[in-house]
Image 1 (cartoon, rainbow, N blue to C red):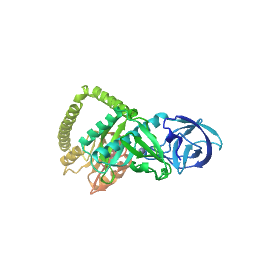
Image 2: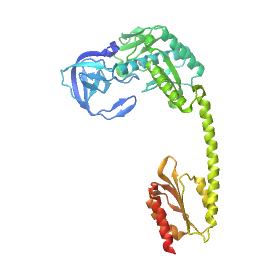
Image 3: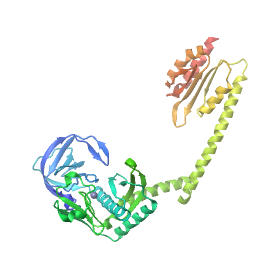
Image 4: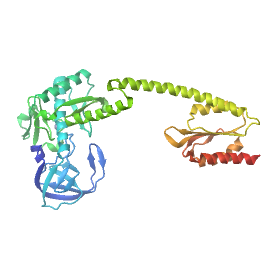
Length: 409
Ligand SMILES: [Zn+2]
């Protein structure tokens, strides 16, 4: 049986009657995103809400005031997922979320057109397709060249400009007229009534989806690049109709934001970002050199203290691993208890700590320090090097070390 939505894709309201209503906990799947559901599945005499199939996501809408969150096809039935039960025999006024549906019609008819041109003019058949929340793609057996992409996009848009009619035709199985049509994208439970989407003189394709009645309603098609697909295949991504405008608007917003940040015109963005990245690299290198020199200076200063200190505590927020290594190297051979701490650049209060020195001091202080700082790591060869989960207790650590050594005197 063909649903009302398959006879006429443009119906946005319709009245039907509830035949069945059963509780269900089946999941809701929308553009591949899965969510839990607890409610009811309602079967109606007929429906204008399209049940997911043939690559096209389900419609959403309302049955009277009850929201329909998903529609699934089970054999001959369309199951409407709702939160509240509807009694058998209830007359329901169906309303369709037309914006979502029309978007699906544009993407789906766009896919038929794109697949037809690639197959007929470039011998590249489509093996499957995906309609996503922002972008869609068709899957191809092989890589597709930039020249083919350009020619295909241009040809599709030419046919859109020519306003080629798109017809829906119904056939009985074994009708000889079916000979020419494709079977791709046809769910097995769709085969009872054979339905052909015909882009006049361009393509005939078996399909259960909802389509525009004229290619002019696609407005335009934009191919936006390829990415590797499953098992060596290629996914060719595309946008049709309102999605082209929507995406272009988002890009304009991003471009304006960048223009404000970079204080220069869009044609210079790339050049300016490259320059910024280069400068940042040089600045980081300089900072590293200065930090290492500073580490050597700090170590020299400690070595020159008379009488020699028993411990060193150094908390430098911006210290890098290189800085810490340089401090430790500078203090080699000194009989010192050393505690170094630094902060993670993007996570304040978290950081790196190093504890090393004579065994008896490490044993007395090590665990207490790591406990205070929620340290993660272990003593290895008399040295602790690890992460600190909470640096807010750093002053407590300093006092703990001071008290310990004062009491030794
Ligand atoms: Zn289709």
